Image (cartoon, rainbow, N blue to C red; front, side):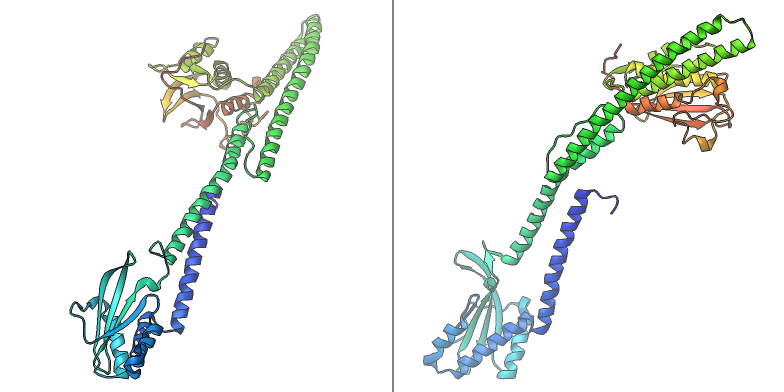
Length: 445
């Protein structure tokens, strides 16, 4: 049942309850039927009992017997012979045989005839069984047994109405539960969106009191998370600003020192520290980015723009013949392209980049000829500050935040990135999947 939603589970529970209820009624009926005669035998016994009374009652007192025998759905009259319009009906032969057997036990050789007819009684159609049974006096008793013995409402058996009303009530209950659980679905959707974006996704408070309390708590939690992330960014920005001030002073002092190997190494360390601070600040700012995902960017144009500052010899670009646009801000897409191109150039000697349309999404492919990434590290390479050894280390100037920033940007705008090693065992292939914008969309500058 783990793959069923709450509405499906409730529907299954209601259906199972109705089924078990019907089974309980059926088993009760079968159990009771095993203790008492079956309906054909009960009808035959009643017919024989009335015939016996009529045989033993003087003609002047027979009306009292008829008054007692006549009940709803069971009528008795008598006459001199079989009615002229009476016809046998073989469809109830079993009932006739049972009644004939009962009569043989009481008075062998008596006439037993059975037929059916549709009659109009009280403006309602009633299916009627008619028995003609001979009396000792030579007359015949005419029994009229209709299905009015079943209690009816609007000429429909009450059992059928009960089952139908149970189904209707169950459907209404499922619809009511669906209406009550709709806020849960919206709440789950908003929480899922919150995992890919920073700004709160407020959910309308409705439903049961406990559900409204839960929605209110989650809305407040979203606000607090945004406040915490904002404060973290402000804190990192302030620390970065202060550290850059001290690093600038330190570098100025280094520049005034006599040239030498130690001074050059110290300058490189300062530059690495500045680069690390910039990456940390960018990583933090991306986590609180509020850029709208409704902006449309031309992928070909963004790729050419980002590659224009790199060495043309080490980067091989190709574009699609037709315009290919993505639903993503241009600045965010350029940061993704810059990170992947720079990593390809840093760890390899040649990078090939090209966009394409694949399975209804826009795809950017980056392939380098570097050492690649060990297979066991492909699942954790997006973790902040992760650097695979021995190829991807600080000696190449990396901080371990580049791929984390790429993934964070793509998650925030509905994209994703997939890394794999080359077919020859060397090189890394990065495939960036972006939400495809409609052809009629206007590109944002």
